[in-house]
Image (cartoon, rainbow, N blue to C red):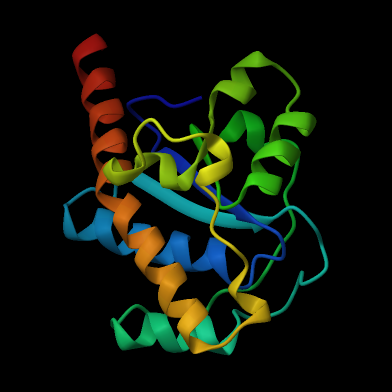
Length: 175
């Protein structure tokens, strides 16, 4: 549970944790740091499967991040752990199947309330169905697919930063 003495915790979730979710994790962490929130918000990522557990980030995702001076060499893929429902304040699904899987495996209503589609924070997607908010897996494509993934994630980042900042402010006011 989030408190004034612990950071606000966000986790991004995709299938294998080698493309979309680590890109979102690292892009979001960089944005939070640039807004002075790096010490107050922690971001990590995971996959809904263990298919890629132990593997590094996809080289095409690393190339895209590196082009924006965001290091990714330390990333090691891992699978979702059930206890993270209780240890994260915001759980961001990258595609509709991840969103559904997280809802199905959530242990309680409090956990379900933490799950959001990452693109729901993109103002251009306001009012859209959850089915319209997915980011397709770029793993099956080429560099252009990773460019598109970058663009879709980037559009949601300001809204996520604003959401985390507001949560931190609410906690300060209530304590």
